[in-house]
Length: 81
Image (cartoon, rainbow, N blue to C red; front, side, top):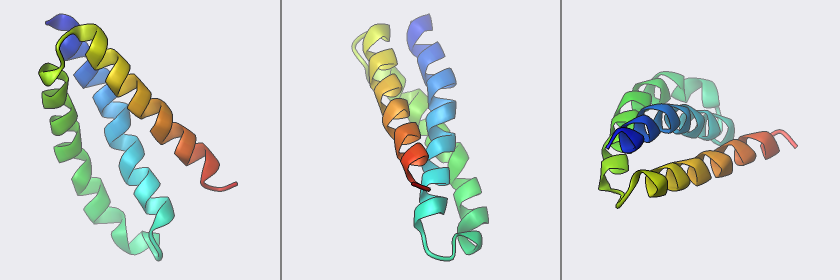
């Protein structure tokens, strides 16, 4: 149970931060979307924490959220290129 909790809190936080940043970089006139995307951070983080408990095991939660983090940060890295 603690593994799922830590996966949701730690990896959910980074994923919830990466997704609005990715949207900010993709949307035209991103500055106009800054406040709504910042507000979106907390519901996303809560959803990822809750989703970690839906996993069958802590390992699966870590793998799922870790893979999503890797994909999100890879997309952020490729965005300016």
